[in-house]
Image (cartoon, one colour):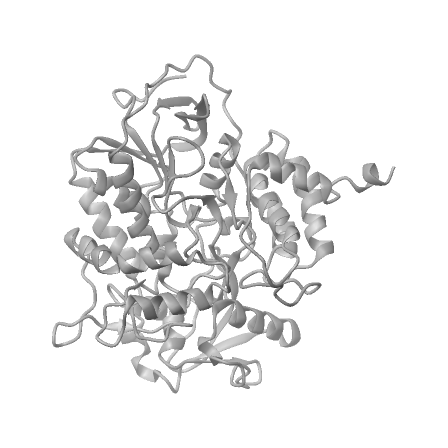
Length: 513
């Protein structure tokens, strides 16, 4: 065991995506250490985001209109006060990004060029570089971080555990392939992204299985809304892992969804192709189950202009032998974004002293049961700034020497879990499948093998999903197909999840004895 030289007591930021990068830059010139298992931005979902960042800055728009759309998409579970506060800071967030070198697309007259995505009542989505917004923002922030002397970058290292003393963070357990290190610190910002890697079909980096949620849960922090996993309706349906995203902005430009016979099957659904993501994902899921394949047809809407408007998507399609100007694009739903995660307040504080969480690994209450498109990058920037500002105002607790460290942990591997997770926790759910997931995942989560860490996250999703006996937003159950009045968000700690798993019949033979 060793300690990274000279880094004791520094604020630790875990994650190299937009949320982690922004938190580090906001804390400057306070010394921080930014921890990432890959090069900064390389394994982050934000680096792959196409759609952009929602900001109500247009002349016909307002934060109140943006809030109304957000609450509608969130299906009654958004925290309205939290959401209003985050959305009102859009202008500051955009200015901050531009200050770090991000160049948003503009019209010929110099005004912002806004796009429109599903369930937005206004054109309010800002892009950078067309359909490579996430990469453009990430690259600008990475460059800013590399030029910031107060940020120590620790890459090629994986954070595996939070160490806790007297109910608060005391350090971070780091692991390289052959050794364990401990970073003593009393202040951690978790910014590790989502959990799409738990599923066979995802648009996320396949190694992202909810590591931050797992570490926080093991340390005793409360989790919230774990059942709500958003499936993007239109991932490029080709043999590729992970699947490439075909941005909602393509549908915003008028592309339509058709079945294998060319029939437009969304025409009679309110909102049609721009209905909320859960509605579109379920419709495509049903069509694939009936007819095998679904296509996004942009020929009439964009034709030869497709490559200019969506150069990144055009390149991805052409790599698969598809010319979107001439033929429809095969698409399917894929795990894309997790609305739940580490429960936080408006400043990013978790229930565990010394732990803040920002970005997709956090559950602020903004998204409710269904994220409104492009609100996630806005939340990542706003909450990273808030958490950093809150942390900067805190006095660092005493850093304790670590006398005992766990042995070298096995490399976490979600692959063996993916079949049961994909089969039971996908777009459509029901009791038998959820209980199968719980029975399968609980013993793995309680073990010490390669599947233990991802199983903790997957088990939490399954337990939250079984306890929510209704359909709402991204959580749809065939056995409870309607929303139930009076439903609220749920918070649970890992001990509660384990207890609920037992009570829900994780060991039915024992229960019936």
